[in-house]
Picture 1: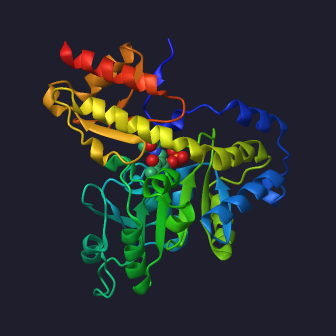
Picture 2: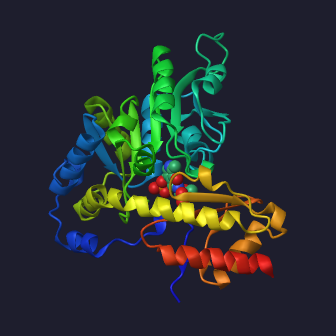
Picture 3: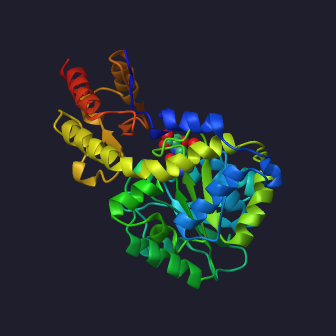
Length: 345
Ligand code: TLP
């Protein structure tokens, strides 16, 4: 039985075209800067994002943490949203590696704006107050159900932060999903940020890899920090070539993922005890509350699994389902039917 895997968009398998390209990739030692495929990918990413330079890194976590390290100094504080990835799911790396604390701010439905951020900033506070060194946003916001920060809000936050001399970083793991939902380009979203991390290995389907983009100077320093973290890779053109296909070919497939997430949310919203507002499902993530069904999220995940659907609970009340190119419209229908069956027992 083929499993319908909705645990994440990280579970996609490389396409046949990616596998072919990987077998034939032109490679060199990237620690010497001599892998032509990696160099092409980096140039193309910089161009697409409207930034001076880009760097291929093994994971989104490493990409975010390189940026945190470069923007901050030990003993300072990053402002971010309460449910953000950097704060919750990177093993405390900001503290362990960069010596910074995180000041989480609760967004409205996960979305920050300058009015929420401003009171949390320590700018000209007394000397003994932990100074703010970075504002980090996430777009789309994973644990806010893939919610998207509008351009006007991003621009406003970055403008205010810059006016205080604070750099801004974007965790754009799913920035292509955000761009589609906002009907804009990734360059337009990236424009006001000093650095952006985005993932090739999520909805874009590459087997491995993320990128950071920024100024030439920033990326030059990022190369050293990546090496410090053990992320200097050698004939990595075999991966970069899959990344290149992900970058060029996959964004056009995301509309179907968004439509599937909306279909899923619409179907789930009709089930007894399930709480989700399909209107708020803007990208490829559906987070729904099942507390009122009397079934725990662990039990729901287990029941789904026995029927061939994989999905994770993200806490005691909520399940997350993520659509991607390995899940069809038919399988979404099937998932709704199976969830209904479980609740109807
Ligand atoms: N997200 C994963 C899990 O870690 C939660 C997922 O399944 O969604 N930023 C954001 C917004 C992310 O969602 C993720 C991964 C990362 C960064 C980290 O990327 P990786 O897994 O490549 O280190």
